Image (cartoon, rainbow, N blue to C red):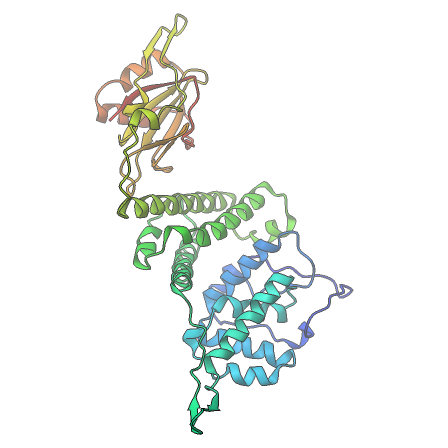
Length: 400
């Protein structure tokens, strides 16, 4: 997350003067990597990234107790002293930390749009209702009867969303641990276990994926050197470390997708007519046979039905002389064909290599499984990660 600052001549209309709001000091070693408290003194082109970065910063260093104090300070400084007194009585378990972080950000110069301001106002009103005393009115018999207090209790969806946010915080901690360890090429973090622990629903995974995609875009922009502020903000990382972080994020995004697949698969499906495998793979493009006198190649493709449900596959792209090796990930266990794409493979374990002598090299690949894997590993060529998409020049050599 990058702190953005401007010159003194910058004009802005805030609820309070940001100069009277002292910056928070969490006194944590991680500030070396995550920086000081975000300060917003000018309009940013990457508003969403800055917002997500700020949320990550506050959630890393502070909990519900501090979040409550931030919201109270926001109300005090914006002239709502009466509301601030009411919020002091609110149980910490009723707080939505994200809204408290948002209130704090306004004190640091962040400009809310109409929708965000409404959400913050609605949240404060909700919290007020949780501490209001039941009204008393006189009944027909002349006795005073207590009117039941209307509570704005969160429904099941809100509870599950909160669980997703808590899981997101824990997974963000994995990212912090990875970065603190030096952002090495190898890592052993399993976000799926954390998602399972909090029983995150598939429809709430976007809470995580949206944030991580923004994080990925920020790293990509830094590597490309397009944004000087981002380059400066990530200057304490080497180019190799940034590429490792990008690989780390890609793996997590892949694991999020795998979790959704596994979660949906574990749910008792509705009784419906099974779709034949032939119909599921009907749109997959591939080359049935390939003959080339120059390279002495004579290949015949397997039918795509062999791919569906297998856990390892070898596919050769005849137009680019590239050999694709697919390995199923540990969550899906097997491949699934969807349209013209193979899904359910491990992006880190699966690789593509260019063949210099296709006839000789493919002959070795068509041997036993262990021999083929060892031979492919020893091929001296730059390995890249496949995206799973097929074309009409690709021959399916093996699937098992």
